[in-house]
Length: 369
Image 1 (cartoon, rainbow, N blue to C red):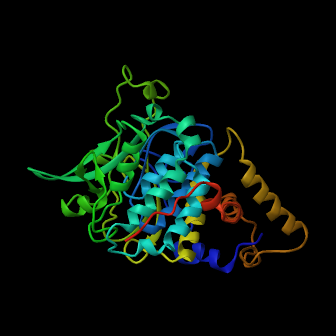
Image 2: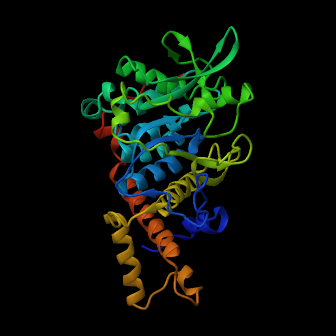
Image 3: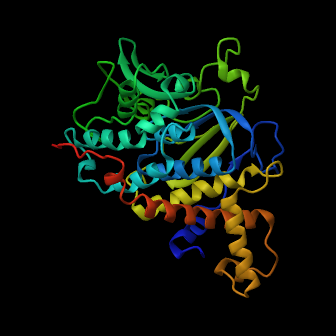
């Protein structure tokens, strides 16, 4: 139950928490969200193979019962957005990150094999049971997929939310990951046209970076009269989730709640599985640290982690982190340690329970070339 040396690197190499208060908020406050509350919108950035970071954030938000009326996303972040809204299997998605990383079909520059395999992964991720329970009609105007395209006026970013069918949704998710000669040579088509990974088009059009007033990152201005989502909350909080820092990841934090990991934007794009695992743990930690639990208390997973820590203390055992400290842990330090333990426990449970998913969930191995 103690954190492994590998996971401890989250603290030593990547820092613990980076939270940017919204404009006008008390800078000393680190509790920017409240358990049991619903907020306006969350955006998941592009992430390469650091998708586990996004899934760690999603896992924490779900554990703490923090929900959002709308979710937008770019590239692989669309998987996290769909899972957050309940439209796909979060636990399976976590396992798939690591299995997809090891697929031969994911070799950069494949002709079409990446998308042939990725489609089959997605069909298991959003299985028939999820299609039945969270219908397309509910996802419309809640889930926004960012795509790029070439027009007569140049490069353009557009959002897709009016999904016409499950195939239409699947095609949008495939196109969201299309980087020519990167993920694939041949493109997946969206509505009979070529669409691209929006992060690539952000770069080509000189629109890289994140801000609250960057319209293409967020849902359109709300219309309470015609949008049922807007009758649920008057909140306008925007949460930005970005696993990496560095080139192309400049953030203007004004009027944003930012969950920003310290992984490397280029070097960790094709992340090693150990880095991906650290990403999941850090994502869970950072999200948990920003949530006020006074309203509903700690979720069960965190309570279990807290009990494990207290049992160690009562048994006269200490983790390396605790033994190095001569003073009592602060509440923030306790939360960080418990969140790390909770995330590791959740991760190991998922990786074990989902190891046979290709057999149990109906994965169809496609012909690849």
